[in-house]
Length: 409
Image 1: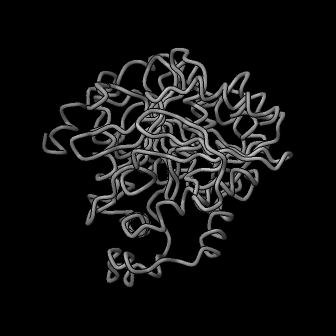
Image 2: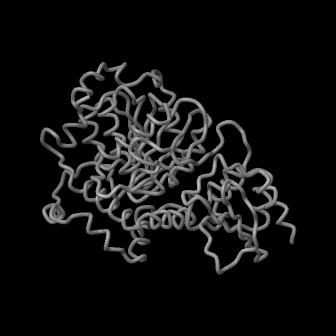
Image 3: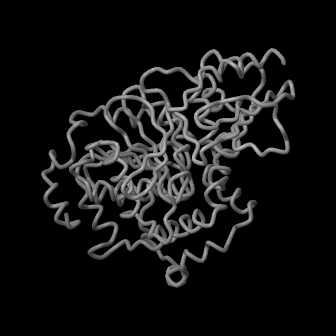
């Protein structure tokens, strides 16, 4: 056909269905050679991969675009594909779960390789990506994002840890219960159920933005399971005036099932959240968000979670800040110096509530792992290697019984 097709055949020969997850049971991945204007579809059904000439009349679930040089590089070593993606030389559109999953499934079979799978838990199906071996590290994404936001983090930390990124319920390819509270205890219970199903008793937990708030909840509920918490620009209860609070309390997020937002508004929102990210990441992030948001249940989950973030009580016996003072054990907070969503001014309030917590300030906006990955991941790696890192909070602080009593266990 042409000189690139043998490289694509090499990928097909390495295809491993055990690390590829197609939620619909089948997938059509379009592979485009940009400088030759050629394209083929990798059709995956029942664990088998076959190539077809790309047909514009058949919609591809994911589209991978690169020039001939990059495709040959990927055929030699699929890790070059991830590097090309991060450098903007490989474009992945529509569905990162399937696009990156294709790269993972056509790579080498080394222990700890990148792998995608759906895990059936007692609460429902959880979609995960995982890599590495060693002490488990669970990653929890932010509002409107998916596990794919942690691809650089997984790559950076998998050499020393078993890194597991999950789609929280309502987002990505995890189940989307309706109705459901979509608040921190709800999300934490799904994280706990995933660890239970994977047979993981103890893990480090890392959360970004909304996921940071969920990680805090996990630590409060499970001091006997948390080895340590990494909280990247975590969402926290507002301390200032919330002028829309009374209105939002009257608006039910379930109504969002009938309210699709215009795509331009959504795209502008994501650009504001990730102002310093590379264009390739921004475009891919927008499409990941839209994948769930443009479904009725995904919209409900997004609005319910956003509403809970805004309405969380800061004070009182069950308020966020008094509860934060009860958080035991080691925690690392990562702040963006230019973060407009979770301003670095929150740091002084955290230092008052948790004097022993550690802090890393990064010259970036709201998404340190994408905007300043080298500094961010180096700080996380140092924290994970700290003395006593393999001892759970309860053993260090003696809080397990108190925590179980508080949550009625």
